[in-house]
Image (cartoon, rainbow over all chains, first blue to last red; front, side, top):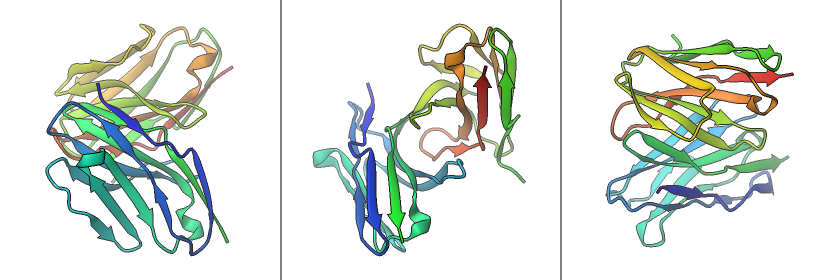
Length: 112
Length: 112
């Protein structure tokens, strides 16, 4: 069975602080895909990144970076120099074929 | 040019009623999903369809019946609505086997 764990329910930081959102996954498959989504207060789900199980390269996109480590089954997400607009619920997800499972989400609040 | 569109956006109804939520995607994707997001923001997969064929039915009560008339549409019909059905329902679509899912804007269902 597939499972995604986001142990941090809520995180609160002050603007310009760096913050890391943790994601740990479980799967017996060798081929799978990992994702991060953002859900701002407006409610829509916004895709941020996709990673396949064969690509452990870390990725950076502006202030966002992702650290994928198969050895620890983790796919962590770091926001550098956080901004108030980063306040949202962030979801990590694991997909194999037609089955896409989400973690419980981490609510990030960035205070000015 | 909405990629995944759901209607209605809001639905308020009384217990015991039957209601439907429609979903259409214009992305040419072959896989469509329904997710339920509860008040704690937990996103739970309900159904997954691939080319109009039901692939995942995640222990959802029989009162929920998805219908996929064609690859671009996946509607959700709910019979005998209960208070506990109140939630935000998201439709999504993706390509097999590895791409991200694109989500509709969600339908907030309130059962009173």
